[in-house]
Every structure is written in structure tokens, then in C-alpha cells.
Length: 392
Image (cartoon, rainbow, N blue to C red; front, side, top):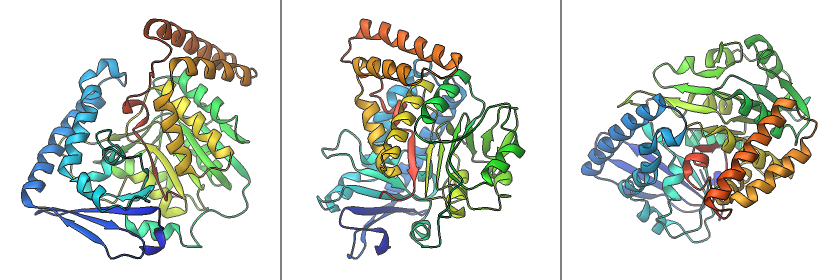
């Protein structure tokens, strides 16, 4: 594992057995640090997971609007604080040298389904937030640094954007329009994005694949996980496995969500679609564990691609975009919307109308709550996004 590490990078790997949870902390040129748990901790984890999975399913069955599911919204930080104590994150910090700035997380079993970056960077801990990425397995990290892994050097299409289906089609259109500012490429509208058309487009040499709309991981039927297309069909994991060419270097699925029943037990490594792309040659996959609001997702993705255009690595770009959205005030947000309206003056009338409506609603909220308020401070809006890949 040493080739994945450097003086600023650590790896944390968990193993869950019937008897205990064991934590492995890997630092460059040092023997592994092993924190062996105990049986009572294992029982506490099982109880915590049962409660979380039941609340998750209840949350998923409701609207994505946090105001309509206030309990899950309010309990997110407290629940993750409880998990941090259970995993003894404070002791993990004691083992990390002060120069560590980025951490690779390798979860195990159901830990793959959790926002562990929010646990590590929980506000209860007094440290600067680490830049965190995930791997389905440690071996996958070794594959990513293999010279033969990754897309081909020649790229025909810098960016492929696809508008899938979603509960807010206006938000999907706006997200795609904002993303397309930064890279030339091809776009498939909902009516064009059939399974055949999308697979044909992915057979081209594509650098970035951005799917705006709903995608999902089905814990009980992983092969049927997929991307919901505008014609009502699903491009499944089984369909994707038929691709014959190298896959894009970067895949973004900002409308992704997890579907699993209460008390679900995960036996596979990682999430189906991101793991597939990484195995096939993709270097980085940005995916959401839960879908945020369309407005927040559009803002986050816009900032992410703006950083990518400036040659920032995907891991750093996502970290910066999340911090930006978290600390964005109403006053700054209004300025941002006005700048977008100026830059996107050639966008479709529907997109411009959507953006103007969003700006006007934001203006009303700013007047009521104050321009210094940060409307997206809660991790519901930005904390569901993770990057599978390496942090550098």
C-alpha cells in the first residue's frame, strides 16, 4: 500500500468481523497501526446500523425536501457523532501526524453505504477538514496507480452530458447548462438518451461523463442498479458491462441514491456502478449517497467543474466546491445567480426562466432571513457527495 501514500496522505481501512471492528491506519514507510475493537463495540455498531437503515428507508420513501422530512435532517449530525464515538475516531486522530491533509477511506460491509467523510470531519473535532476520498478496496487503489489503468491518451470528446429523468426536469436542464460552460462536448436530451444512444456515445473516447438526473444503487438487486433515462427505461449495470472501449476518466452521478431495506447486509465491495467504472479504467467517480436539492446540486456541480477547468484534480475540486457551498451566504448567492444569468444569456428560455425564478425566491428568503445567512450550511445539501478514487 505504500505506493498509495505520501507524507500528507494516510489510509484508514476497517474490517468488520462477527467479534469486532478492527481499524488499520496506514502511513507512508511505517508499519500499520492496528486498533482492535471489542465485542461490545460490534454489538453497538449493529444496533446503530439497524436504527440508521430503518430511518434511511423512511427518509427515502418521503420527498427529498428536508422540510418534509425534518427528523432525518435534524438528526444527521447527532447520528454521525454517535458513529464517530463508536468507531473511536478520536483515537484515530491521535495516530495521525499533523502533516496529514488527505485521507483515503477503505470501508467494509455496510460502512460503504455511509458518509464516513462527515464522521471524520465532524464539527465536534477540532481539526481542519481532511480531503477525503474512498476506495471499494485497497487493491483498487493499487490498480489506479498501475500505468496500464486509465483511459487512452487521445480523447475525441472532452465532455458527454446526459439529461436523464428526475423529479425536477427544470433543475436537470439547468445543471447541464451550467456544467457545459466549462468544457466542449456533446449533450443528449432526455428524448435522445435511449439505452442504445447512450451506450453508443460512451463507446466514443470520452474524458468526462456527467449524468444529470436520477441514478441508483439497488442493494438487493445490484445488477439492476442503473441510470434512469428520459424515455422511462433504465440503463442498468448489466447494460454498461457490454461496453467494449475504455470508459471515461471521470464519471459524475450527482443524482445518485442508495436503495436498501432496513437491516440490510452488504456483501460486495463498494457500490455497483462506481465500482464497475473504476474496474474498467475510470480514475475518479463522483457520486451522491443521497440526492440533494436540485438547486444545491446545480451550484455544487458548477463550482466543481469550474475548478476542473482550472486543472484542479477532481478530489481537490470536490473538496473546494463543498466548502464553498457550505459557507455561501445569501448575499453571495444572489451575486452568483446574477453572474450566471449574464454568462448564460444564450441558454434555453426554460433554463433562463428557471434561473430567474430561483434568484427571485432567493431574494425573498434573503430579505426574511438576512443576507449573511448560509442557506446550504447543513450537510444534507453537500455532504452526500463522495469521490471514489485517489485524493491527489
